[in-house]
Amino acid sequence: MISAISDTLPLNNGQSMPGYGFGCYKASGHELALAVREAVACGYRYIDTAAYYRNEDIVGRALHACGIPREELFVLSKIWPSDFGAPARALEQSLRLLGLEYLDGCLLHWPGMDVSRRLRVFEALLRLQEQGKIRVPGVSNFLAEHLIPLQENFGFWPALNQIEIHPFFTQSALCRFCADRGIRVISWSPLGRGRDLEHPMVQSLAADLHKTPAQIVLRWHLEKGLLPIPKSVHAERIRENADVFDFSLDAAQIAALDGLELPEGRGRMGPDPLCYPPVQSRKDS
Ligand SMILES: NC(=O)c1ccc[n+]([C@@H]2O[C@H](COP(=O)([O-])OP(=O)(O)OC[C@H]3O[C@@H](n4cnc5c(N)ncnc54)[C@H](OP(=O)(O)O)[C@@H]3O)[C@@H](O)[C@H]2O)c1
Image (tube, rainbow, N blue to C red; front, side, top):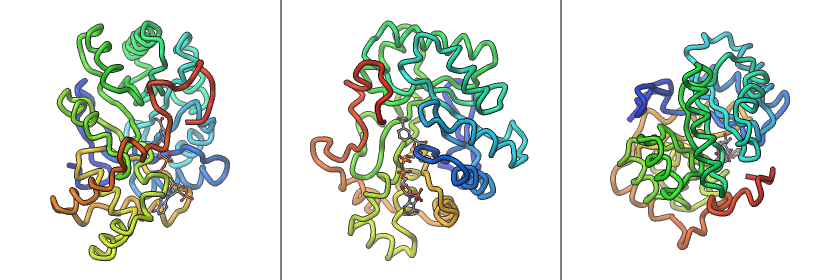
C-alpha cells in the first residue's frame, strides 16, 4: 500500500503510476483550473480527465501553469465509445487540448456493446503505445466478460481498469478478478459523490478516529489496494482528501465499511456497463 500521495504502484506492463489521483469530472472553468493547481500543490500527481468531460484544455493549461516537470505527472484521459472507430484522431484531439506530446494513461471509457469494435480499438491503443503517444493503455467500466476477450486476443490482461467503487457499491468480485490477474483497479466516484459520507456508520468511525467521513472512505480504498481519484473543486476538501496517510483502519473497521454495500447492486450510481452507452451516444456517465 502507498504511504504518501505521490508514491507509485507497479503495473503489469512494467510501468508504474501514482497510487492516488485527482478526479476532474463535472468541473470546469476557473474553478477547475484552481482545483487542479491546488491538487498539484498538495502532492497529487495523477490527474484524471476524459474527452467526455470537455475540460481537457483547462486541465492542460492548469498543469502547465504548475511548472511541474512533465515526467512527474501522470495525466490520464479516456476515449468515448463513439470515437472507437477513429481512436488515433480522438487521442490527437485530447493531446492537443491538454497541450501534451503523450498521455500517461489512456482508457477506453466504456466497453460498448460491440466486441469486435472493442478489440479493434484496443489493438489501436497498443499501436499508439508503440508510437510513444500513450504510456499505459487501459480500460474503464469493463466487467470480467469484457476483460476475458482482451486476454484471449492479445495474450495479456490490461494494466488498468477504472470502475465505480465506494462503500455502497463495492464490486468486490470484479476487484478480486482484477487483482488475481494483476489488473490495477482505479475507483471512480470513490466518495459515492458525497452520498456514502452521510451514513451514520461512516460518521461514527470518523468521530472515533478524529478524521472526516471522506478521509475514512478514502482510507478504506487504500486499505483494499484500490486507487481512488476523489474530485473536489474546494481547496480545503482537496487538502482533506490528500490527508489520509497518517492513520489506518483495522480489519473490523474495513469489514464494517464493506458491510454498507446495498443489496442487488442498488448502491450503483452510474450506468450498467452491459448496456451503456445505448447506441454509441454521448449520454451522462
Ligand atoms: N471512468 C468513468 O466512467 C468515470 C465515471 C465517473 C467519474 N470518473 C472519475 O472519477 C472521479 C471521481 O468521481 P466523482 O467526481 O464522480 O465522485 P467523487 O469523487 O466520489 O465525489 C465528488 C463529490 O464529492 C464532493 N466532495 C469531494 N470531497 C469531499 C469531502 N472531503 N467532503 C465532502 N464532500 C466532498 C465533491 O464536491 P465539491 O467538488 O463541491 O467539493 C463532489 O460533489 C471523477 O472526477 C472522474 O475523474 C470516472
